[in-house]
Image: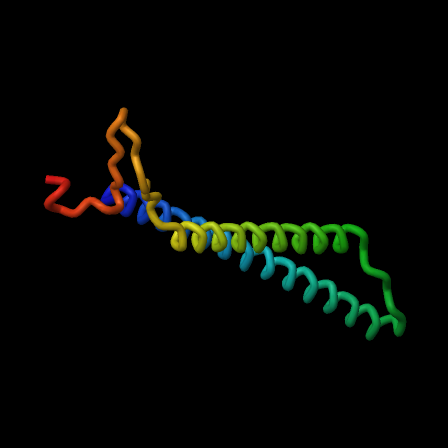
Length: 118
């Protein structure tokens, strides 16, 4: 039981660290996407003010924003999967064996008391 608890703690710690890394990546990609969109909007405003007409978005900018959005989505999904795994690990308890059959003798572990285990 003690081994299971220490293994569970180690796994929990690793999953928390993975979740933190995934969330940090998500924030970085979201910030990158926001920066790209803001820059593109500023370029569009300047062009409209100078030339009086709208200029279509550049393909390079659109592809960069699409890539940033995709990466933000992937890192967010990784974060959610890690959190789900952490929740599953914390809900799951140690596996207990109810009955062990040893030759003709049957020992019910769940019913053994400290005196009987001896």
